[in-house]
Length: 364
Image 1 (cartoon, rainbow, N blue to C red):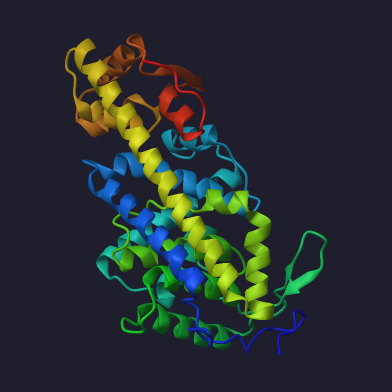
Image 2 (cartoon, rainbow, N blue to C red):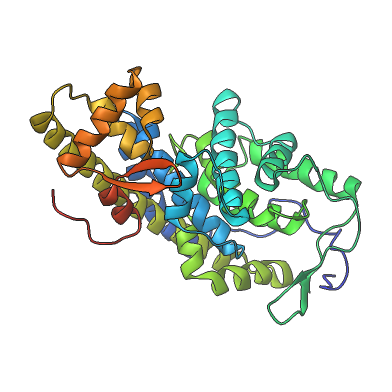
């Protein structure tokens, strides 16, 4: 029997003991799968995925952290990246750790397409900037905004390892007949319910959705911008998680998450198209307006919307005076704006930053 005040060491392993692929779920699965396939197609067509996906990954990191009440701004994050994280607030650093964990997870999945307990722990350590592993001390409780305890996760390192081992077996089983999208949603719930770390469980669990889809071949790049949907529907997210635990209400949870995946995939596809179009327009203007033009130069100011002379030197293998000249020329033709940060001069890609924040983009 579930008791919110006692450690839920009896948390059932996956799969659930009921049929989860109901008619309603299968209908939503069809549209979510189509949207995800379109997103995969967009990422496969990118000539240089890292340039565009790094900004999308940072947006995901920002919003995933915001779900846990960790707030920062695009401006601080991109400035921090350009200044090697000097002077960043603790919240901004946490967001960048999330992005680092997402990219590291994707790298691990490319090396070996399996979800493992060791991978879970590695991601948690990156997010928390700590070498701590699983929870060992008792007393972890989940409370709502009023301070009321709503859930007590399993307790004891041995119990946590058993639960994670069972989750690992389920995640990597190939012939269970479940659609990979359905499995991704089930995995996310189970990881949240196990709650193996003192902090960072939600962020790690959301990364696992993306990594499972990568492992299953439904995504080619870690480009699913899931957290924005959850922020917009945050109360439903937590309510439906609780209803699975307390009532075994799997269908509403699955429908919610499949809708999140469908809408998120469509929104991310739209962003990729917009960013790609902006990059091409800016590259064309630079080509027609400056000597020594290189598309690589434009890609640098998309990878780093706050760009330093040093970044151009390193990316293009040119001298510092040449790099400085390139940036000054880009500013002269209206593609970047210089801003001073201490003794540093940063060159800001205003249009990309506006696009990422859903603000009007100035015409070229």
